[in-house]
Image (cartoon, rainbow over all chains, first blue to last red; front, side, top):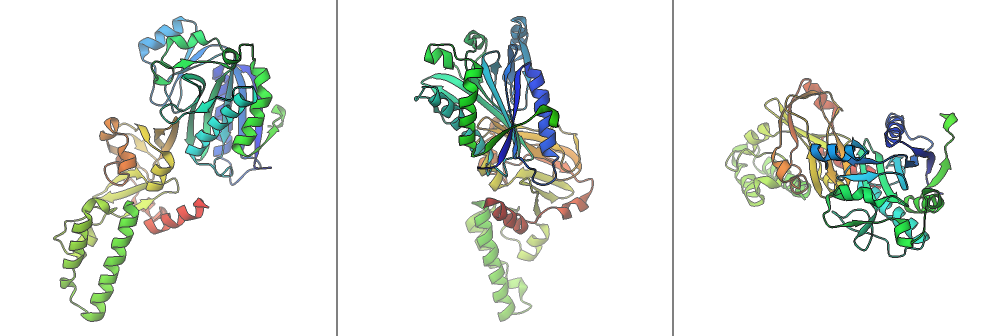
Length: 227
Length: 190
């Protein structure tokens, strides 16, 4: 039902490795001649260590970068939309590297589908009040607390980057930046909202269901050796 | 909106040509008055090409028109005196949503046709830009630093992105005319 998207389970890995894997899939899809058997790959994983990232516009000054590295975190510049955010253990990282054309999506509707997916996951886990908000508050919120950050890039119809949803992330890491450049806004996690430990593992299955629903596609597990 | 205004002006002008041809062949000198009034009413900014001034005749104005060509990635380029001005189409700016940031190359950057030269950011999404031709960047639109929304408000005029030289002008022939581009959009809209 719907176009096929490969599910690539990255597991727990350093963020830099996730970016390298993303690059390989991006190149593969961008250079594919004509429509392939699948509409793209959903890269799913959990960052193994703390990392702060900036977007196309930046979002982290050099002095901030020094301060953050001193805390023991990695700092990365990316080409995605959005400003500064944090990635780390306890966070579900989803980078759908998709060809928008077979999925019938425009970039704006791709971002909306990411929001719908994250809202769908929250609802499945018992948080009916999770909602997306219009720009500049793109992302998924519970009241004034952000549970899921979104930032994507698109080139030759192929998307990269995606969303980061806090399952049991140590939220203290967010205190060292202004997340997404939005002053005075809070951050939260599934564990924080439901007052019990929710691991990335536990959120996986409902996330996959929510993704298939939001993107109207079918996920097929990609076996690493079959490259 | 700019595209629709242009279409109605073109139809009006061509029907004027037809009227003149059937009634008074050879009296092209009498034609300019009518189009000048049309252009003056709509204003030069509503047309997708720079006008030579409402007082000039249609014939001389036609020779100065900078032809706009389009790529399949929704960029346009119009050339004048060997310099190309590059921007994104109305279709593209609508698809992007409100542009909040323009990442443009430095003056002097050499670009090959289809090289990525920058990106536009909107709604947490950064969209890559591709060079329509091979050449060197001579100017970037610095107004976009303060007002990136110009890309949405005036994608064919004030929202231009870069200017570049044309190393290989014959590459223009490989791009789509405005009519071909409009057909292309229709074919992908379904």
